[in-house]
Image (cartoon, rainbow, N blue to C red; front, top):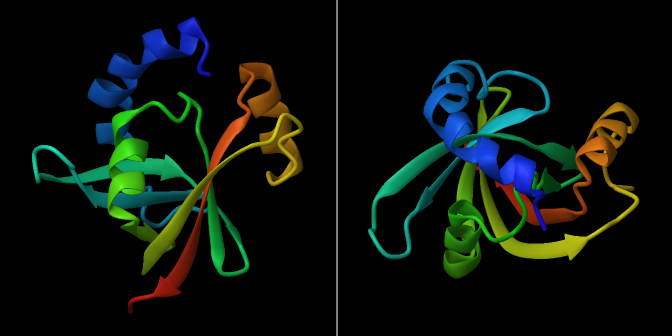
Amino acid sequence: MATTRLARMRPFTVRFVNPITRRFAAHAPMFGIIEYTGRKSGKRYRTPMNVFRQGNDWVFALTYGADVQWVKNVMASGHCLLTSRGKTYELTEPRLFVDPKRSQMPTPVRQFLGLLRVTEFLRMKGSSRR
């Protein structure tokens, strides 16, 4: 569950941080832009995210927890697109999991996520689109 402090930061992140990170997230290491469709609105969304590749899988640290709209939309549809380091991938088979030790994350990221008390993650299978 996201801490109250982090939940309060979400509107700031959506309004100010995301528009800035959207400019570089598709090309920077450990970042990407996910594209998904709103389950109620049908609208297409593009959200910059931290993401970590593990073989053919991609893992997202759910900083604000699993109870956020983008996660609900991806879980409902079962897929999304991810553009990372200039390549686009189709991600499927979303699986939520809890990992209090953050063992799936690189060491410096694991330590940072520990400070934020992040324990929820989303893993998806990826295949290259282009």
